[in-house]
Image (cartoon, rainbow, N blue to C red):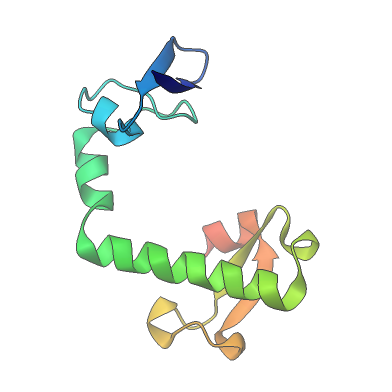
Length: 107
């Protein structure tokens, strides 16, 4: 039984069977993600590393905290910045809302 259909950036429709996740379909390194981006095996392996998973969990938790404190509307199209880096934690004194372009251009 087909549970849903994914389309990747104008590519072919991909039917998923029950119990089959998207990651199981991405074994071919030319497979596109639902967003249309093609991830290499290196990218997938890098994003699966424990330290990268931990950082992603911290970023997601920070965003959820800011949504809880400020609501969804002020964060639409914005990023949550860690003023002193993710190592300093997700305390409200370490977080601020800023535009995506400014946050992603920081070095």
